[in-house]
Length: 251
Image (cartoon, rainbow, N blue to C red; front, side, top):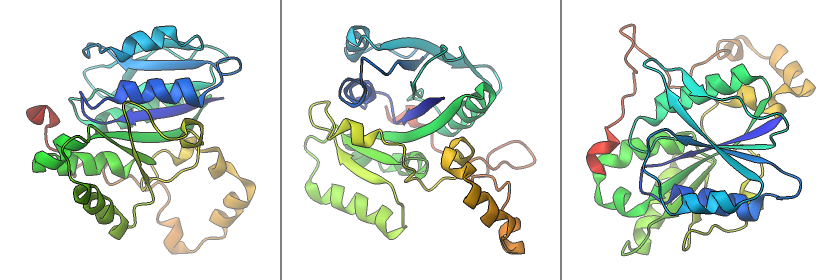
């Protein structure tokens, strides 16, 4: 089984630097093989040169068809870790739903963690991005504060306090010069996200005791079976109930 890590965030937020550091310092090049899926057509950046020097890492491209289907090659046999970088100038929800369905179709993928790399300057200075980032953080186990120059410390505290008051279990981490703290620990596949959308890819959800508990649950709990994540819900017209701002207008 391959562990899947999804990296959310806007374009130009340093996501590829973070991925490079997670692979370089959080995986074992002698025992673990990594496949990095990059969005077709997104502008390259200097971090791409690093990927070519990581001897346990290969890259592949993905794109979506005109609907919501993910077009990406299946992981190579024996792949241990998959990183999926989303397209940073478009709707993350469409992509998350498509990545989820693609992973289910492969049949040999478990969810590792979902990350959001936050362009702190963009989030602090463009209030219109708040709903977009809140959607990303709803799905995230870890939020990385990146591009922090000239942003006061109080802003970071207030940002974290907002999610603490809303009982978000995700962790907040600082990125320093493209580096993260304890990459191996951050890759440990422990769920700390609000969303349940990827729980069917979580091996702990298949635990026998968990299944028994579900069978013995109340009628109220039974009504929750098959519950759709609020960000995935659609109206009869096909439009999503929760609609996000167009992040490309702020980039």
